[in-house]
Length: 319
Length: 264
Image 1: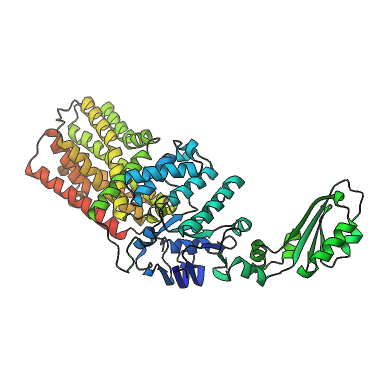
Image 2: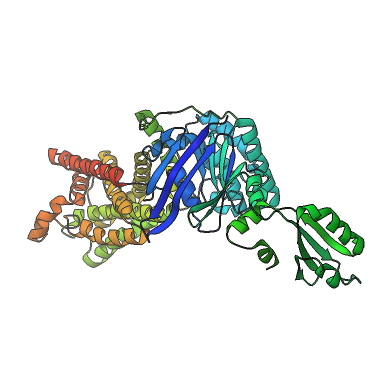
């Protein structure tokens, strides 16, 4: 059985400035080697939560234990186990890319030789070799994110706390990063705590998820558990070719939960047990050559996220 | 990669770092601070030296080189440069770092606050050096002062930079943002430079300032500079140096005590 690395009990954070309740009675456990997703709308309190876990903010009440250590009393212990990737920009703008990774390794206690070796490896692994001698102030937002991930990885911390690491990354780098995270967990039992808005992509890698809204946890479980709690209908999206001679209006309107999204795009929600019959009906009636796109989608973690946030998926998707 | 899951303290004992780690971290932190100024060091130099040099030239043009207190004018402007280069710069920078949550970058690393503070103080002191030297040389040339460039000046420069940077750091960490730090330095700056016997002799100060200036570090810094430049390393010089050292230690202690890089 996997050991819990973080145990958080009744954690509450009220910012003194503005008397803002950012986290409200949060309790959770994160186990070693899992990818733990923290989702929620902007201003929900996700970053406040991870910043407390990283020891950067003092909680107002509650407890945080990291590997059995009370880290509210002993916040200095946290950086020995964790690497934190912050949303905040870098301060050392005139360091070179390689220097940023190298010095982070040095401060995590690596020898000069080891820090150099790991820096070289990470520069290659994260595709930063070509910009290794560029100053931080001259690199793009996406490159800066990749550099931040490299800096988080140097020193081999067993727990990575990553606050929106894939924002600004192009699709290729996003895939690279998600694969890297999966590999780290699978091969090295690294625990990854991940705040992200890329819910659809994160769904592929996260083991467990919480959804935070207005400072409270409103859902906690595996992606499968959460998806089963919400609308389990299947969504069909049909897009017609622009010059199609077929007028689908009357036919599609015969389905109970059908909505016209655009002039050429329709959406139908159907119960899982009717998928086969509805699919046959549609394909038989509408010649496939009249279609530009046809999608059959089960509930995603993003649907859970939307629905848990108090929104109706039918309306939200069609709005 | 080798991920060590339980390689550190797993009990609730407070973590304290050995002196060797403090020294190592301070050296590397200082090095990163110096590297980080690689594109902006000219501005540091101009910021610290422009006003003192302008003052020197102004006094030279108005009063000529045979002014009565030439040694005070020159050393006063050197102190002026140190205050601008170390105290003002560090106060504003730390206020700015605090405002933008830049201390998080360091708080998330296994390093101590004091290592970072010392690194910042060293950086500011080092970058005050060129301005101090430039003001001193130009002052010497303009006012034809028979000053001695004794090696002890390096120690005076360093200790003065440390003491004033320490005060700057204290202003920075007690200000909530860079604007407030900026306002605070604007208040502190004239007090340090104009109410102490920096530009003019102690006996020419108003009576009340003769007493209040005892509490100001610039009194001792200016004394030490004048003594070192005239080659008069009397016991009083060493006493002044001792007081400057005391200011350094007290200000660094207060900064380390008061500075909390975790948000409340």
